[in-house]
Amino acid sequence: MNCIFCKIINKEVPNYTVYEDENVLAFLDIFPVAKGHTVVIPKKHFETPLEMSTEEFKNFSAGVHIALQRVETILSPGGFNVGWNQKEAGGQAVPHLHVHIIPRYEGDGGGNMHSIVKNPGDKTPAELFELFKK
Ligand code: AMP
Ligand code: ZN
Image 1 (cartoon, rainbow, N blue to C red):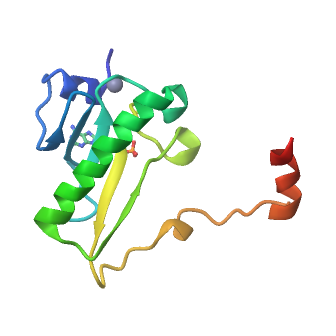
Image 2 (cartoon, rainbow, N blue to C red):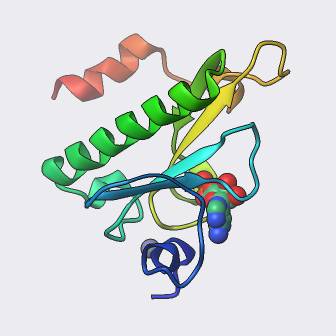
């Protein structure tokens, strides 16, 4: 498969490893938006978590947790933003699931989750909740 992250898993492309176990590889992002920007990928190719079993997602999440601890221990940033871009509409460029661990530093000028998009839609949360009740 012509996937840059699968190539990293297969050691065809080098990486700066932060953490690795049988299920995940965490490595420094090559175009960091912050010092210590790290991406965590499952070793098996999935585009999004929606294709994963609960067990596969649990194992992946456990790896994200350890990678987060590694970055915290080594760089001690002021905080973090952690998450993933999902599908084209969500800004995903590499179609192999990857969680971004973005360290945040006091006064770095960055935003937060609320700055990703401002498109609340035409229904109130109470109206939308009707869909989830069924
Ligand atoms: P996304 O926009 O969520 O798909 O993010 C893809 C991320 O992968 C970007 O932050 C890229 O800088 C990063 N990236 C792409 N290729 C590499 C690579 N070879 N090594 C490390 N990070 C990479
Ligand atoms: Zn892949």
